[in-house]
Image (cartoon, rainbow, N blue to C red):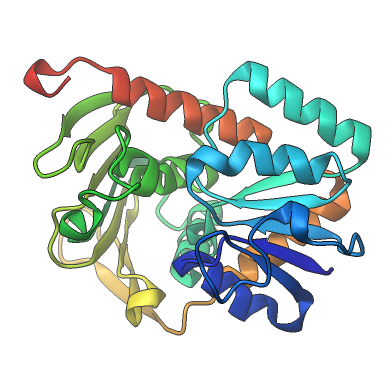
Length: 304
């Protein structure tokens, strides 16, 4: 497939590297390194798909533009949709034979893939509880930029973990409760704790971690799974702890994955599979949108 890349910032540059010579044009109104300032300036219709790596406020117009021209669209997360907007995109997708897919690349972290495989194989039996944490210390660099939005860490980081709650732990469509939501240093939310309505999956995200941190803990009837770190930071570890009955130290094995980050290439391959199958990410987009909007609108004392 031949691609046009819209948005040549940090994520767009990563996409460009993975695409290589399949990226036949880049578009960015603010980056002088891009080939074009606007998608309307690109004269050649001979491409198959677009990657949209732009701020959220222009994503929908770009998706409509490409779908109406029969071009598949990979859009960076999150894609905030209402049911009415989703219906419109689905009509365009069906009419012009093109799909959109919202990327959640952490699905393809080697140890997320391995963790999911262990769960599906029944390695720890019935799952009791899941806790996921994703944090960094970027509040200072976000303040005063377009990223300092009302939704803040909810759309930036929590969207990833909500997606994994569905993709890995089978909670697609589940309602979430807000346990905590704060704006310590930003206009929007810079720290949050959410839980599924049955309280079996808890997610916590923060721009105030100061040190990059990723951890998933899964407790089950026959053991536990613990994942620490992401390959984009260098090393990721996944430990499988097998419970000893009636008690005692667990038998432990560890899988280690090293960078460079393989998720962007795997995510692109998944997008091309979805395009070939004519499938969109609509259902997942609507669920994540509804969850983020509900979390942002919850009343929690003085931070509402």
